Every structure is written in structure tokens, then in C-alpha cells.
Length: 396
Image (tube, rainbow, N blue to C red; front, top):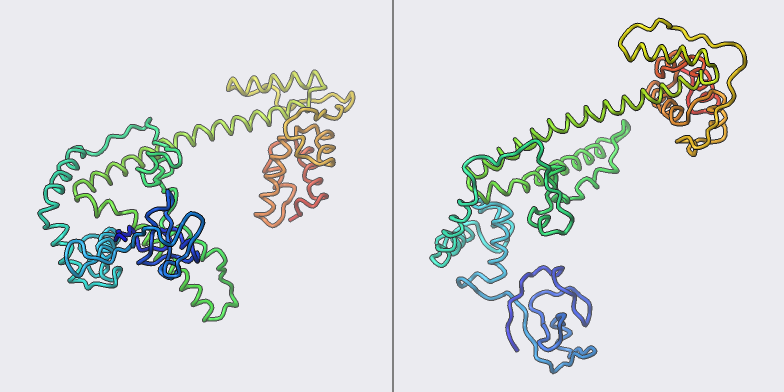
């Protein structure tokens, strides 16, 4: 029999008992002969002589516990680890919260023990001095330089760099998993209505207040750097991040403007295609349209403002074969696009614009539809009447 140190007292950090499958609490037994995976037993199963496959009751065993002093009497190894974890969570000097988290020691006991054994202990003085020199050598005199062209690192999940950055994603300025990551779940089903009783409304407001406190704690957890590094290093850290995000915002605005111009140019090309299809069967009208567009592109006033279509015969239905967006149309919409000679992509765009405006206004008039989509008024009327008939929109 041998006495061993248990790393953690959290039962969820250890495999369950192999005998009764219950969560293990200290002290518990570990077989010294079975392996490589640990064979753990609770005291009740051990006293019954539980045996399983190759494990025999006469095997050598180890008692796993952390209930023994390490640095001084009265402080067990388990309490030493709990103290270090509480100082990391609550911050150095916040002894009242440290004692509240530990629950087994007072504020004065926590402060005196930590100062004596971890700050003023000669055993750690040389180590702390070397760590401080190493830390000082790693910090530059000024803020970390950042260039607008720099691409922030995007480490893959579970990579070494991702673990070193604690799940932080610079490109999104956020963490992969927040502290208290499911805090918003308690709010997803809350709805304030007029007929709520006073008690029910007070309960809902209390849930919102609790959520706000959890958000504050989440924000506080992100400021651990201020408790680890000195004030000068922390100011440099904040200054570097502020400059980085300012430059990133400017760069993002430029990208947005460029994408917006590309989108507007693409929309203009689709509109031009829709217009030219009106006159594709009439040589004279098509020539007038091309002359008008050339004058507009050259920045001069076109000589022909109204395109005259000859009355020889109406254009045949538009062939939709191979046109993008055709597969998204039903049979009646395909028939409309063929008769009106409207490409499916343009029709879908006009349809969505009219639907959005109808939802926003609670109804739509023909004049509003014509102001919204800048195409031939007769085509607009046919699209408008079709959407009314099919029930997609309603008249105002």
C-alpha cells in the first residue's frame, strides 16, 4: 500500500468507480498493477473485494488523497490548490472573495498564508526574479506596431497557436467560447406582454438583471491580463489592441465600399440586360437603345430619349433555357418571365424588393412598385398584378 497525491478533488475530472460506476470522492483506491488506464475503486467496492477481469483483490494498491499538509500544518494539498485557483479567479489582494470561494479559511488566514509561502518564501524568490527578468525582456519599449495590410492570425482549431491564444480569434475580436457561454439561453423564451401580472413581470425583470450580472462577470474574466502583468505592460497591451482595431475598422470600411460598388455595378448590368431584351427583335429600336447607352457612358445628353418600337409584330416569348435562377421559379412564374421577357435573376430581385416593401408598409400600391423598380412601366404593372393575383403581396 502506498499513499499518492490526488491532482483534483473534482469527481468529474476522474473516471468513475469501476465497481459501482459512482463518482469518486477522496480518499479512493487505485490499483498499482492494472494498467495502462487507471483502475479506480471507491472505498465501499474495495472493502467488498471487488474483482473484474484481470484485476484481483490481492493486487497492490495506492490510496489517492490530497488530505495532507504540504507547506505548513493546517493547510492540506487540496486547500493549497484551492487557494491558488481562488487567487487566480478573484485577483491578488481580494482576500474577502478568495476566502468566500475557499469556504474553509478566513480572509486573514488566506492572506497570511499566501504572503508567507508564495510571495515572501525564499524558496521561490530566485524563480520569481528570473521570471520577472524574462518578462521584462519580452516587452518592447513602445506599443506593438501594426500595419493596415497585416492579416490577423487565424489559427486552426486545437492547434498549438490556438491553445496558446486561449481560443481568442483576432479576425473576429472575440473568443471561440465565452465564459458562461450559455448565459443567453435563459432569455430566449422570455417575452414581455401587456397582460403580465406584476409578479410575473418582476420575475422576468429579475432574470434580465441576473443576465446583466453574468455579462459583467464575462467581461471581467477578459481582463485577467491586468491582474497578471504590471500597469505599464497592461497599458501597452491595451494601446496596441486599440490601434489594431482602429486600423482594422478603417480597412473594413474600405472593403465594404469596394464590395458595395461591385454590387451596384452588377445590378446595373442586370438592368441593362433586361432593357435590351425588350428591343432584341426590333433592329431599329435596338440601335436606338445602343446609341442612347453609348451617349450616357460618354457623359453626354443622348439625342434619342424615347425609343420607338415598330409595330410589325410582338416579340416571341423569352427562352429561359440555361438562364440562372430558372430552377427557382414555379411554372406560373416561368410563364410570366417568358411573356414579359424578363430574365429570372432580375425577376427574383424585383419580387424580393416588392415583398420586403409590402411587409414594411402593410400593403403596396402600383405607384410605389414603379418607384421601387426602375424598368418599363408596363412590365412593372404585369409583375405587380401577378404578385397580387398569386397572393405574394396585398394592395395598400
